Length: 235
Ligand code: NAP
Image (cartoon, rainbow, N blue to C red; front, side, top):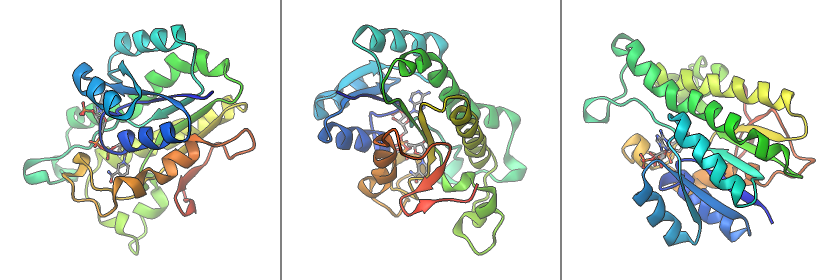
């Protein structure tokens, strides 16, 4: 029996990933920073709900104790994420980017993933086949964002891509530190969710594909990589 926790799973890609992993036979915890939203999502899917705000040490530690008391964890999907958006769903450009706005994005997208991974590491180390999936972005890729022939090149924001580049490095360093675990970063693709004011071009079914696949990586699967549904991406 595989037990999986997905952070920020009350909606969007996390919710769809939960649905698919439940169908694959996992026991799934829907992590949600709002108890009611988490409870409702878990009820819809037949999952378990756990209160978990990735920006709050006490919340994350309490969630780890709950999951531990229920029997432990095999798969962690660090999915919770935010993007800074301005008026009219606009992405603030370099001139509008403040340190405070950047800190807020990093608090969730980078420090949140580290906070959760650190708290759940003791549980994962007791699993026979531990897996961590960090939900990154194509915008994390220095190679793609610096290449004028890619759509990623046109993205004007600073905080969000920088946070996902940092998450990629976190992924790589954890993968080297814990060779018994499969630890990868994934790019779902531009997906219609609240994150981007539902301007994305893919469905959540398409976006969740690579998250679901990497969450099911076996002991011989890749680790320390960065993938989209088509295969490895350039860092
Ligand atoms: P979404 O629909 O906005 O879902 C984001 C989820 O994260 C929500 O459940 C949200 O909870 C949760 N969350 C935010 N801050 C949190 C916190 N402090 N603690 C716990 N949960 C928190 O967006 P999405 O598109 O599914 O995003 C999921 C992941 O995919 C993110 O990491 C995002 O960066 C990544 N991604 C998305 C796209 C895309 O095109 N959509 C592309 C590449 C990567 P609330 O409901 O409480 O706000």
